[in-house]
Image 1 (cartoon, helix red, strand yellow):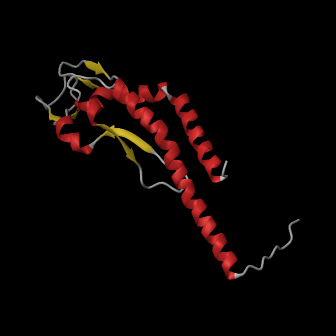
Image 2 (cartoon, rainbow, N blue to C red; image 1 turned 90 degrees about the vertical axis):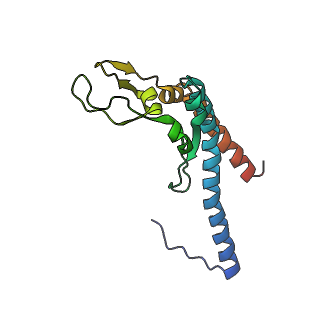
Image 3 (cartoon, rainbow, N blue to C red; image 1 turned 45 degrees about the vertical axis):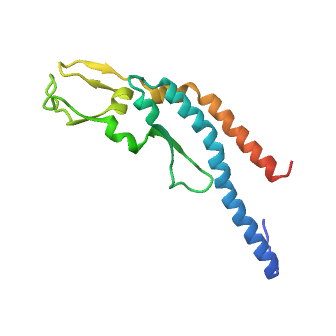
Length: 162
């Protein structure tokens, strides 16, 4: 059974503890961002290598995007086409209307999505997706785990002064 524990701190010690805890909280976010960046860069390179190349626009438009709304100690990077390339990656569908099986077609087509997931043809057929994003991520997942652990270990060693 735990008893009551009381500490009597002077103001300087309390301020020092408060500052140390604040630095620790900010440090976890920095470490999380650094640890997530190494495999994210590897994923970006793998996705660019696996992206279908007709003109190279899709491959060249892929970038890392850091998600901002995450709690401390967690960081997520997305590999996606930059918004600056949307004008090049979105095209008007030549014959919007309906497909052969009666489904309505969109008026615009988004090239990265059609290459990742596939698309329906006008005569009712289907072109399979190339899965350049999902496939590249699955292929390197074990290496990504190792890269994250190495980065965290490096930061822990720096914090402990080793």
